[in-house]
Length: 367
Length: 220
Ligand SMILES: Nc1ncnc2c1ncn2[C@@H]1O[C@H](COP(=O)(O)OP(=O)(O)O)[C@@H](O)[C@H]1O
Ligand SMILES: [Mg+2]
Image (cartoon, rainbow over all chains, first blue to last red; front, side):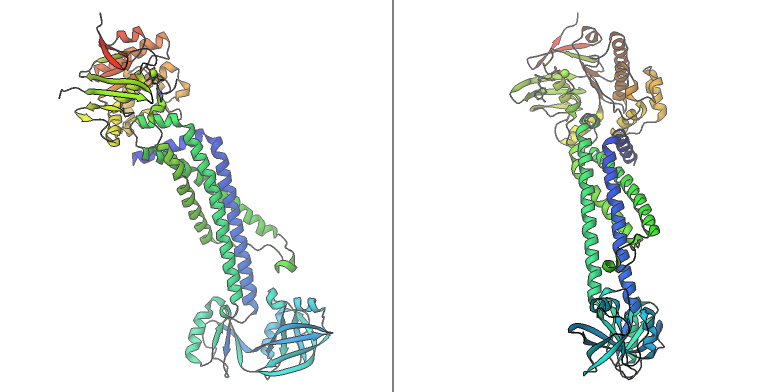
């Protein structure tokens, strides 16, 4: 135990007497880690924004049942009729594939919160997504030809655009049409207080009704995949930051070992084992990475506060977010911290081992 | 087997083509000061390193209490823990105070030294005022004295010194030689090298290292 404390003391005094050689690796680790925290939080922010927008609009459960599902299950906030079908709208020779949401008055009541301009649709009218309206140059009051099917029955009729809606998710806004049809039946849209409860509610509901039940995650696999891809990129970025920091610190420790051959010779002549001497140098790396990671956490934390305070604006048509979303996650932070610390210290074992190999004869060769 | 503290048997060492030691025998068997002199390049430092367990000779071995020093790496390390050594220069870890230098040495030898012991050791050597200084704040002579005290930490079986007075002025030399005398009062034998007549004067036995062999020189 005493010997461990001593190693710490030696490492500390070695590192501090050589401050200038450790300033760069400390800063490198600090900046790298700060950047990592910010990037992870932004990726998280985008994912959270995407999922929030998605679950804000899209039904959390779709139930295929002729009778209205019971709503005495915990966590259900609303149920209404919703028919989803593919269709085409055409206007002056331009065609566009669309997804038609046919719903009743209750559903329209819910969707009306997304209306940007115009009115909810009456009979023979539709709401269209904002991106769709832009690509076709449509505004409320314009007429289009719409072909779609309801319960496998094809329809084709002239409809009037009653309004434009914006969900905040490009994939919806670029192809959605909402039509009013009280006679529609078949699918039921269910919204929950907490969309993460979808699987539980599906299971409970499944015991009570016969029809198929789909959760929003099952129906939007591409979103789940997008989030997975984001997670993958987060991992790749983390890996590269850690590699950079690792090589930086390896270099610093190697330098330290090379410039301290004399001191190593003295320690060795006192009977300290190569393993112990390597440990002293490894402790330097531990000290440097602790200081660097601490610095990085502070810089990263302050940067996040600034980013979320300033609300960095984004070009809306590209990101569908008005400002840079950040979401700090303690678990990601701790994971990145531990991962980086462990890998850096493993990296520094390599040069530290060299310290143990220095010959004590170094001290005698001063001539 | 004699009851020698340390015994070198048929030690041969060469650096590549350069034969430095050619089957040398040497015994230390009482708390005396053995002086080894020889021209520069005759192999004094090489011999000290081999005796002290710092470098394995090409052939031959060193025995301490009938144990082979170069039996294994472990036995080498245990020899290092049981001896004290003073080099010509730069003996101390410059990052640490005198006190911490002594603590490192005692912990390296598997013991823990109390501050009182350090004080006592330093004051018997007449340098207790240096305890909290860093090596850079000491003269070369003072550094050598601290190094000699460090060699005594942990009750070594034997102390080696390679040209301990080689870099100091006359006044400091006298002080350092007095310290070596004090060490023998603790019944610890000393092996030192020098090419200085005054230093060799304090020795009980003097050997000349020449052509890779040691020859005792009778002191008149
Ligand atoms: N690491 C080494 N490699 C090659 N030759 C060496 C090495 N160390 C010492 N020598 C040579 O060995 C001889 C003895 O050196 P040394 O033991 O330092 O002598 P001294 O201490 O008596 O001056 C010298 O000729 C020196 O050049
Ligand atoms: Mg020499």
